[in-house]
Image (tube, rainbow, N blue to C red):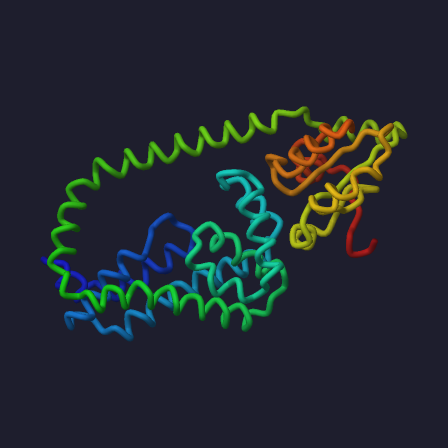
Length: 311
């Protein structure tokens, strides 16, 4: 069975399924399927409007799933995204800054930026965006993304023979190439993670140590470095903590009393953001340490928290 015949028989389900699986978070790129389906539509073996409709439906269903996960389980979703990030805290932080700067319009372009697209959908749910607004802007981005690749195949449908030969060759190489690529990717992630953590090799303050100092009356400056959306996702803070962004910290650090220890925490389990801030303060002569495991580690010990909604 050649490619066009295969797509004529199974293409609609393949288009919808690949779009839904990709947007649900599985590493299965749908763009080759869109291009191939566009070529089949150009050759008359598939219907272009049906392809576009099914692809957009699959994308939107996956996106709405992430939107509601962000709305219902925002704190856990942010922690999960931070754990799987190549450099902890960076993907979430940078995407959130983009989202807060551009608002709903950032959804239009996020489909073309895989790392941002993964994070921005639950962020929209955490931010309290209305579903209708989310669907409108995300839908515009989906139309642009799906149409770009489908129409590319549609207008170059006469190259379908070349595509078929390439797919036959790819099939023979798949069994060997995929394990090699997967192993290489995992080794790359491991090396980058080790390199990243070595750069942040600074002592941590455990939750038990901090609790003991607070109970003993030791004066300590506690800084909550979480972003506005992270605080909205988990509206609690350590007792007496003051909230500052990383930018504010670098501008106002001289106001901290040098005689006091400074403990900083963020949302990420690897405490990357607070470790970087602690290194900055250490370079300026302060005794600063990140809180091990962030606010999540403190919460797991069932130590007291203050509600942001009542403070």
